[in-house]
Image (cartoon, rainbow, N blue to C red; front, side, top):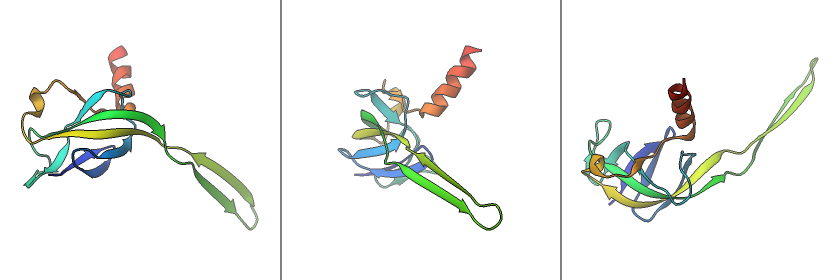
Length: 126
């Protein structure tokens, strides 16, 4: 059985035992997390989400992707050059379980993106 989950603005097709690189999550290595935004699980298709479904995973590590270099060169009268690099921060997770029902009863913490967690902490601090 497989599921389609949504996290970090992207969709992933996963099944138990898969190792997936997702956008950085607010979790440390060894933590157990749960993805609650499930678009499809087994033969059940959500509208847009499947109610009560979840995908549980274990965080392996927080990593960085390969460096992407962008180079811009403007020609003619205003010749200028610019080089920029970027390394996206990712979280490596291993899918452990697919739950069709009863996700709200499990005591596993929800997977929250790192940027969303920082914003939430800033709001609650004020």
